[in-house]
View 1 (tube, rainbow over the protein chains, first blue to last red):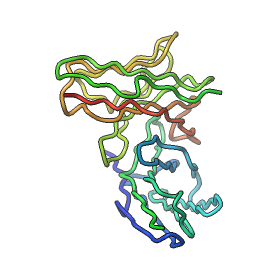
View 2: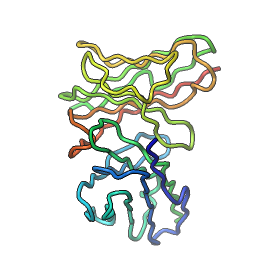
View 3: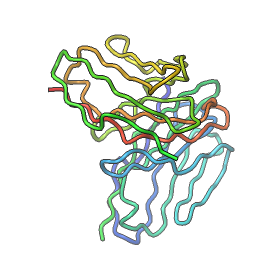
Length: 111
Length: 118
């Protein structure tokens, strides 16, 4: 079945350093969503990408959807302690309602 | 505008008992997803429902698990004869109707129900 993997699984950075998580699907996606989950909390929607090669920015966060629509990345510039949490991608495919969530990248930011 | 509501937030059951988890979607949303999350892991899709209809239950275990979303009232995820392996956080998410493969729709997650089976 379809699988969505994320790397790295864990990342510790010093505050102010950059951070990137990569998401790879075994199948071509129609769209991809990104969520953030704080420790003990619930996933919160960040963004959705639909077009091949699409790049979107939200302040210090940059999201990219690969040309083949099988991979995506989230880059955070100059991390802050408020960025701590687990970042998940979720892939949607044609003709289906369900989203397959990635394995997640847990980010810790050291002050 | 209240968000997605789930209750109870924490549920403790002994092996063999039944667990009922409730989810009230956001106002105006008629579609609900249920996900299971084990500690330190990602979210596993279980089922997608609309009012009075199961749209996709491909992620639901064949036995002991069932879900419904009646015309009136919350969506219910029911786990019969719970076992220790059912211990997990169960999240529901609501969204406006739409195929994931189309433009897709943002999912609004509830706070989750943490189920512990003793």
